[in-house]
Length: 222
Length: 222
Image (cartoon, rainbow over all chains, first blue to last red; front, top):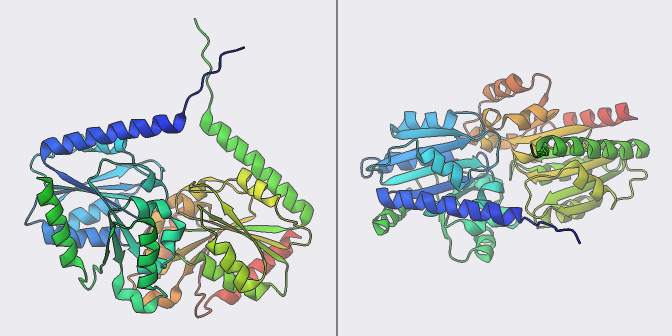
């Protein structure tokens, strides 16, 4: 009988990513940096919310920011222009995610000395980014009102791996068929422990609570 | 010197997909069925628009519909309930796309005799579905007003491979910072030949034009 060699590609990729995520976490621990990974569908308001959040936090803590996009550099430029914090644009060459290895390589470009908070604005996608641990301490997802309250049923993994789920663009809720009770029920069925917070970068709704929550997480990390 | 075997995985996948897409097109040609592939970000209104469109067309032509989702069957059920047409739900097991091979396998489940129009509602994603020819005669993408006019710059391939780009949720344009001129300019830079059509399933804006355009394409296909 001939010898058959079997390789478990999925497990290898996953184990390799876990090892890289551990390297990211080790580097962050050395520097005392708290790392949040921001995920969402395209156009759910990541850059706008991050800009508002960073402007609230930047005089209290030292923040660095990374943006992943396929080939444009719009988001990092917008964040840098609107907030003045150090911002890095990562071009991932057409992939639908960023993994821990790519995150680790990107972190070589930053001097993290004194950085209290590292923010990653992931690529706009509800499928792929959920599959890769980036080494972040918290996964935060944005789920915008115009997308509709059924999205947890259709993209379950993203809602399962997120620690904080921000319902964004709350200022537009009267224009859409978005049932908050149904949305929460759909999320809770997948993720009973997630923090669910309705927010609007435009009106400021929920932004105090988000700021407090993040500062508490940073405090606990030290 | 030892023999080194080199396999070009990317090329093989692409060539295999092209061959499968040709099989899909051959089957459709035999049946006289016109095939449109509907792509967009999550929550841009694919199911709502398709339901409205099918209800306009179903007394004029024979329509079958397929929905791809990770694990839910909501969309096919909604379309079937709201329109009465034959609808098939495909679960793709967590992938971010459907390719020509999966499409061909799904088509084995349909009796296409007498079907004038086959509609595929692709998974909500602006990255992966753009990379795979499904065998469709036309790619139609939905780009919703709440997503923002910069999306072509961030997801260029999707806007490049689409023949018809529907700007959806036009009824909400006064609530969002969406500059139509800028959106068109961003699309035209990638795809000078795309048909760009603003629509609203809620108010009916653009739906007559979309219906006419589709019926003309079907007529040309025969």
